[in-house]
Image (cartoon, rainbow, N blue to C red; front, top):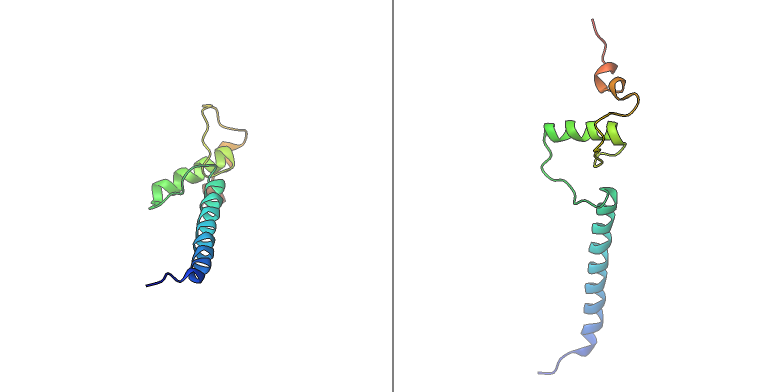
Length: 85
């Protein structure tokens, strides 16, 4: 049975486009996460730590090795926006 060579061109194009789309999506996600893989199954603790990291470094994936917090860290908590009685 002969091979339909003309079908290999569309097959090659589709394979290339799916590979390019997947690579670009992976590169985009890694760039948004500062080169780290995306997080899955995030629970309340992880969200709290991500918010703390965002307040410390400006990015949810950033971490600091310096033990002193930046200026204004103690007053930029979300708890200060709630009305107290």
